[in-house]
Structure formats: structure tokens, C-alpha cells
Length: 350
Image (cartoon, rainbow, N blue to C red; front, side, top):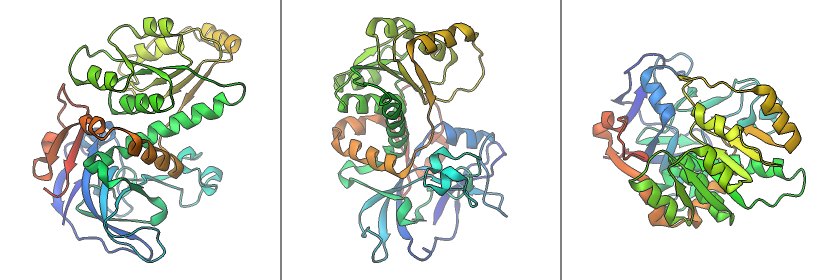
């Protein structure tokens, strides 16, 4: 079968190659790989700055934004042939820390977790893969290839969960949310905000193209202007920052709103530093009971919540997030940056 592999640490080593088809171990599902989403982490693997191969090997099967169809499932697994599933990315430490031992592997304390397609475990960028039932999540087959959006949706579902947990420390009834960035994470964050009945504003630097229309279709408002001005005008209760860009983070952290909650979800490249008056920032946070939290990865419950959110979403809207479907035979083009791209999927069976 064909698989997408890379040699972590070596730039330009991503390629399609023939490997042996997997044999499911006891209790595992055997899955036909349908599609694979591409994100910044995959581009870091391509550039050789991230990732690690399984022990004793130099190459890693990449891919963590999965979608597949169950080919076989053992009795008692809770799955059956023909169902669409995705694989949870992270696994607990082999010698688990306290968080991993309690099933909270997305909050690993020692960094020894493993991640499929990224760190020490082969991923889902193959025409067939296996997965343990406890790390498989069913996705509505009616979504088609849009089901591959479940991994980024799970990241967003976790961020909303963390915001709720912090907000619940006192009376909590948010009304307005601002999302900075209109990439896949930002758009899915806006979707979940609207599903919660919030007034949602999305800020991005793109002035035309598909993003404003996608935001408008949610019943949210799109802004191509200074994030600080939007935050001041809307008096947002919640901010989800998805860009990782220093100037945007500075604007987000500089707002003055009592009991404000901010989730940082985006990862920047560190190419540009920002000067912050930390004493003034700390004073504002203390006096306003503000919280800024970082959120990464997701637990199984977040994947399940995300699957429910996608199932409730408008299918045509979700499909519009997928701006390119690339055949496996044209792998190199999947990693190209194109202005109109939102989410690029690789069709693993073409």
C-alpha cells in the first residue's frame, strides 16, 4: 500500500512510498484511509524542524488529521465495518505522569506523550491504518471528506471546554466572543461560538475572498481591521486567539474588560517579538479578574464533542472550508501556500 513518510529532522524528505499493509493487533480496528488534512505541523515536518520517528527507524508515516472507513472491527469494539472514523492523535506516556495516568493525556506534565504522525508513532497518512477502539471516534458519514476536519475541531472544542471551566469559577453568562484569525481553527471556533448562541466577531487581515462569506453564513460578523479596535467596540467576554501573531496577541492581551477570558490557541513562528509592559498587563489582569490560558491538543471527550458539533453544522458550509483536494499522486502540491487556501485535504485513495 502507499503511505506518506518523512525522515524527521531532514528537510524535503516527505515522499509517497510503498510499505506493508498493517495487520490489526488484538482488539484493533482496521481502517481504509480516505483523506488526510494538512496543517502547519505537517509543513514543519516537511521543513525538518519537528517530529520524531518510531524507535529503531529513521522514517515516520506522517498525518494526524485523519478520516477513514472501518474495514474490520472485532466483536465488542463498539464499531462496525463501513463506519467513518478518525484516530485520536495523542497517546499517554509509556510510563504515565499523573495526568496521563488519569486519562488527561492532553495535559501531559512531562512531555513524554507520543503522537501519531508527529512524535514516535506512525500516523494516518496511509491507505490503510489501525487504531485501538478507545482512540477511535465515529464521525457522521454524511459529512463525506469534511469529516477530516474533526482533528482541528477537537482542538477548538477543548479550548471552549477550558474557557467554560474557568468561567464557572463565578457567575458566567458570556454574550460576545471575538475570534482572531479566519483559518480552519478560527472558522471552527466561530462555528462553535454560534452554536452556543453567542454573538461572534471574526477578525482577519483578508478583505475579500471566501472567508468573509463563510463568517457571514454563520450569522457572525467579519472584520478586516485592527484587532484592538474590534475588541474595544465589541466589549467581548471571550477571545479565542488563533493566529499566533505577536501584534494580534498584544492587542488581545491589552484589552481592559472585567472578568475577561482569553484562550490562546495559535502557534507563532517567533520571527517577530513584541514589547509588552508586563507590570501594566499584570495590574489589569488582577484588577479585572482576567484569565489568559493556553490550550493545545485534545482529549477523547473533546473529539466526541467536536464530532457532535460537526454533525449539527451545515454540511455545505463545512465542505466550503475544504478549498483543495489533492490526489496522493500530486503530494507536493498539497504543501504549497496558496492565497485562497483554508483547508487542504489529500485524497489517499487517488
